[in-house]
Image (cartoon, rainbow, N blue to C red; front, side, top):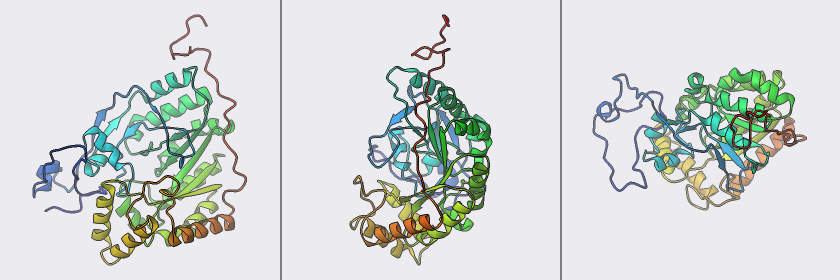
Length: 358
């Protein structure tokens, strides 16, 4: 059986938990997954016909009340991604399908404009994105995220961007205008500073050095930048927390956050398979430490602890993180983004249509 499909975090498609029928892969990966003959699987893009683009977050663990995702599925291919099981709602698998079959909301900016124009919209910070990366590779061509940022600027609604891709630098012109009105923060996620580990875990993301350069580029242009140490994987990258925070701070980051590894549903199987394949000598230790964080299970979905874990290891990681934040001057004087500047442009009515009467 062919192994190590180039540029992909997962190597197989797992059964969809909502489907009654599952077809086992053939012994020939090229035949089953339509490889191009060079250990690659091409990405296929589908039009997403969603009628709305803002999603209300019901979780008390997440600060932002709403999030926006222009893409469903993510070509970055992070093997640990907690969003993988959401692809099963579309009839796909959380494995290779998640990173090779991408749903695209071509009209996201138009839908966003309509939602901001409604009388019941309460100005508030929106998370961009809450599920999949808004700067994944196809964004370079489609520019949907850029168009949406233009809408945020047009309505003066605050936005927090979180990404692992240096492509965010492309939109510096819009980001600077947003920043001048205290309407934007950009969070760069850094899982590891080791390029070899990054390429195994997050095959199509920007390199660690490029992410640090992106923080520097943003901060040098007056954009408030933050680093997100995520996910923290005990026994694999937790020892890097101090160095990640130091490097991010030296490159201009003002804030920092952390998120413990989350393995909902089939992600448990994908991650376990990956860690045993890539780090066979350390796999049991890593998996056992993850279980210690979640009451003996690989994942616990309880609000309040699912993002931080609990127990000795969780407390130790928290202390290491907080002490290094203090050491490197991170998370000082945190202030919310401006919500009092919001406006519906005069050219629009409350339903987003042109106002021909001025």
